[in-house]
Image 1 (cartoon, rainbow, N blue to C red):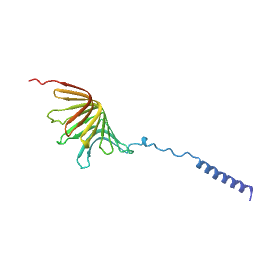
Image 2: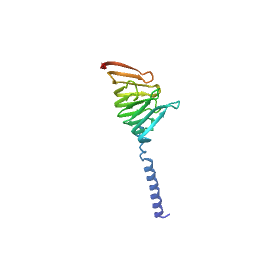
Image 3: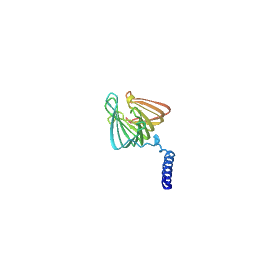
Image 4: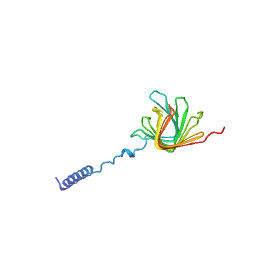
Length: 186
């Protein structure tokens, strides 16, 4: 064997060993953190009708932007308008700056200038304002620990901590309740 063949074998062996060493000591690929995941879909200027377990309308949602998280299947919303049906077939309109819908649609969280208005043909129209509100469509219930102001013709009711049932039309304030009544002229 000539010295050229020996040198070739040594160089080839050195190349194989250095390639193996580089491959063995390479950095593992960076993992994507679940919280950094992109939404699995985004909707723009849409209307969505969510159904309950019996196939009846739970709520209708209109918004300029919805993003769905693939990790927990929740949805975040920009300036949502929720139409919540009551047992009479009429709709409450609930608006906010931001919204969140749980994966099973059993809870809706609204934040920022939340405004709820009773159906247009209600005998006594009601407007409710607060900073945040959690709505539970399956239970026909909404609640918050924030300050709520309810305006009806001739009266303003304000308090902290609030629960309402749209079925029974009964609401409860927890504290700091103030009532202003303006009598109607005869």
